[in-house]
Image 1 (cartoon, rainbow, N blue to C red):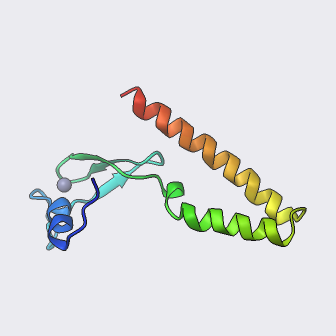
Image 2 (image 1 turned 30 degrees about the horizontal axis):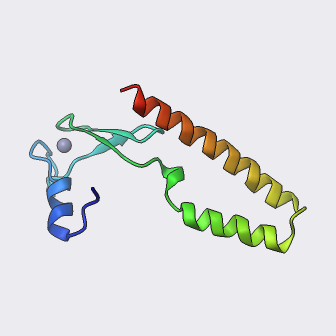
Image 3 (image 1 turned 120 degrees about the vertical axis):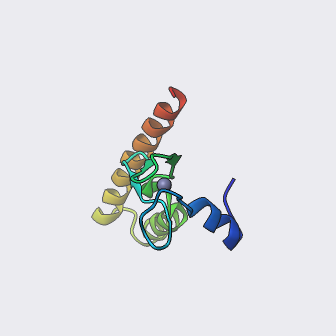
Length: 98
Ligand SMILES: [Zn+2]
């Protein structure tokens, strides 16, 4: 469940082992979104970067499609989307094996 309030976010970010002033976790996140804190070794899953801004990308692709369906840039965008969908499916598959 996503943390909404500032207090919830602060609690989630709090790391007792952190040597930093803010006592915050230092996440080392791989490309599939699996993160581990450098200080306390707590593990947390983060949405991979390509999942964020999905709405923007969809809108952008739609706008490009409406503008010029045969445009080379639009085709490139579609290929990118196909690759992203494949990466997402891969991430999902890996999550299920855990
Ligand atoms: Zn930590």
